[in-house]
Image: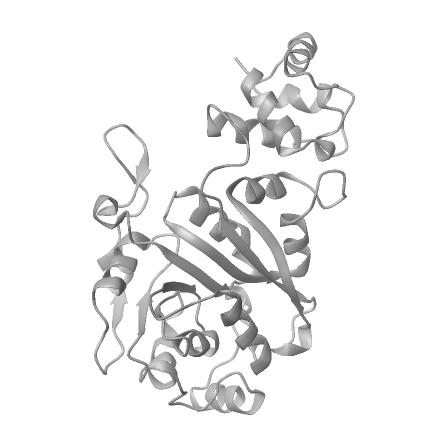
Length: 323
């Protein structure tokens, strides 16, 4: 597809848009606008989108990445929290028929429903703006107590991808929310703080390896695609960013009988950094030293080791040995 609007990811175009709408980046919302066209195109390319795909964008801002995603031909659903930006998006991406804007909080909107809507109808010439209230209901529970969103049964096959430039202050909560909801998410491409990306992809034994490393690698196959320098943004943040590409696993890489127990073990193990497991695992429900020792022996793990040295399989062994 060819662009029917000026390319937003250029410093002069972004500056003109901000001035026209009397906007400034909101630090409280972690807003920094990408002004490097080649970077935006690389992010969209990393999502591996076709016209048959539906892609969820979180925080479109003034439409910089939205435009690049639209040009792939995919159905684009962008969720924007900041109401000030709705008229801007009408101006910048309103002409793209494959773009829909949902105003609301990504942690509250009904993701399965808005994805299903995008798959069943392409919008007309006007930008569709929906409200969070219309898509509320995410996080409810089924009769057996398992979490699901309203209408999830009807949209179980509504697979989608995520591509977003996430605000630094809420990066991890958003990513973990998307993964823990058991949504039919195929691929996650997000730009995050470089340090966060390094933690998410860290291997056992390194300083960056922690609970978030285990969680990301349990749910996905994460890798850093490329680094984005601070100067690629307006205003420039104090640190560099990284584009993280995460392929969703069809099944976890380790066998655990209960995911809740698995992640409780991981949290307890990392609750006291740089401490031996015989000490940190006491936080798993107030265990005594003798109880922890017996648990570790059953799992076949040396209690003098530290959490940052354990592989996913060893954490799984601890979870399986828990009773």
